[in-house]
Amino acid sequence: MESTPLPISDDHALLSSQRWRRRFALWTTAIAVALAAIAFAKACDFCFRTFGELLGRSRYWALLVTPLGFALLSWLTTGALRGTRGSGIPQVIAALAREEDSTFRARLLSLPVAVGKLALTSFALLVGASVGREGPTVHVGAGIGVGLAHRFGFRDTQSLSRFALAGGAAGIAAAFNTPLAGVMFAIEELAGAFEHRFSGALLSAVMIGGVVSLGLVGDYAYFGKMSTSLPLGQSWVAVLATGVAGGLAGGLFARTVLAAARGLPGFLGALRRRSPPVFAALCGLALVAIALSSGDAVYGTGYAQVREILSGSHTVTPWFALDKWLANVVSYAAGIPGGIFSPALAVGAGLGAALAPLLGHTDATAVILLGMAAYLAGVTQAPLTSAVISMELTDNHDFVLPIMAACLLGRTFSTLFCPTPLYRALAQNLIHERETETSGATA
Image (cartoon, rainbow, N blue to C red; front, top):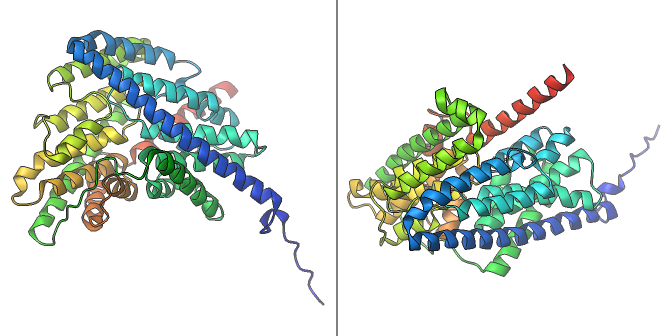
């Protein structure tokens, strides 16, 4: 008896109109995310430049502007814009993990939240916060993805998750001007939502986002082209030193941030629960105190300090890594919008600069690059993404093996302080809050 062949779904046919409509919507999303990322970068640069001009008149203006700015940001994000707090990457992970919860997704990923994230992160840099824009760009990209999915008629749960994933990955590619990093990020950080049958469309979206960014901004390495190398032998001691130090420092940062997110003990914890804006103002005041003792080098993303350190003509203190580490902790603990990618690169560069004199004849630039990569891997526990970002930001693809080794060591030693990766642990906090809210409502 002959078997009847199964019908082929039109959605899987090569020339399926539904399939091409989805691709067109996805590519449109990638272009929109790239344009938003470029506008976001320019807004952040303008805002921080304005803050720098204020400091140029008197560095003590920060004693008023920064605490008040932190308090205002905390107040603005206590209601409907609560989803804009922090990096934004945990929000994307949490929304993808609970994709059936449409209310939760709308609270974390929507066009209003994306616009709020862009505006409030820019404002955070306007008042000097030690935050970055790369994680928030992922959040903005995912929000744009969900919003455009609705516009194009893809409203089912699976499609919305796919568009959020594609928008977030395109966001990291456009934010760093590094398409390959976007691919690695999607696989490594958002792996729980990665589907093989969607991988081709995801890759195309990331590449289109990267091409748009390259076309409008130009093909450049943010920190300039680095041609340093690290020969086998004694110089590989630098890989071990930076890997261990970067991993431990990154893991301690992640552990500290998580502890602050889960609730501080004593007076500070009670103050944060009772009056978040007052607590945020105190965090802003702490940031200014750190800045005043470090020559104002800890404000903002830290990109300028990284470029100076890599060029060998920096004026930062030997304690810059510690100062920036503390500045990042108090900025994140305040609960204001802002990411940790670029501030982490700054801490890593400072750590490498501090280790370089201890490593004999090893090229100092090589040690700094390793410190950046290892510390970033220690914070995020995403060694592939950290290695690719470090290589693409310096256009140095001859340094693959040392950077990868340092990142793997950094990730390993980070787990001694923080067994769960930071973004996933923060996402679990959001999911737990939602589950508590849901169970309370049904009780």
